[in-house]
Length: 144
Image 1 (cartoon, one colour):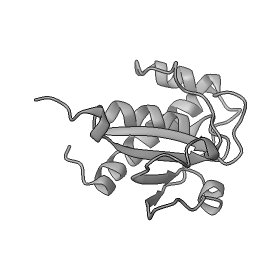
Image 2 (cartoon, one colour; image 1 turned 120 degrees about the vertical axis):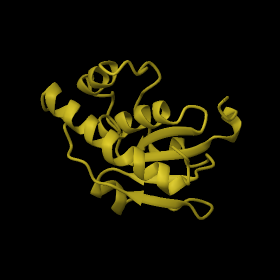
Image 3 (cartoon, rainbow, N blue to C red; image 1 turned 90 degrees about the vertical axis):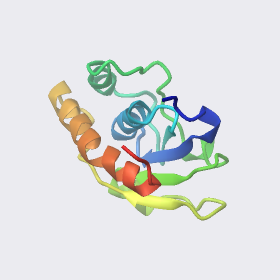
Image 4 (spheres, rainbow, N blue to C red; image 1 turned 180 degrees about the vertical axis):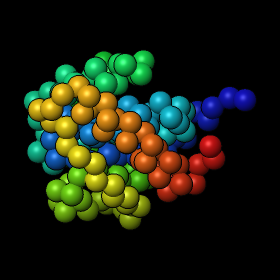
């Protein structure tokens, strides 16, 4: 069985405030969970200068690629065709922009591990994987 071509992949935008922890981990986890079927992007309403090193370590511990992860302002992705917008913090949900076409939305708030230990990042990573991945699968109508 082959994957669907990337050009047919559904695009999921994960929004957070700083785009340095939760949304970056969600982007990597969604890409890994649905290769060729989902193109995950992340952005922030007030992006930080860099991805948190602990987020990178938490993802690398699962063998996930991290070299392309970097914080982006929401304006960097507003021109993209987005199939689903996922907000992972309450602030991003409240300030989520309006997109040119009607876009499905999903909100799941996760604790912000910024400034905490690697163990806190791993815990949030695992919670995102356990809760968000199945929710995105259901929202997009993907088969397991």
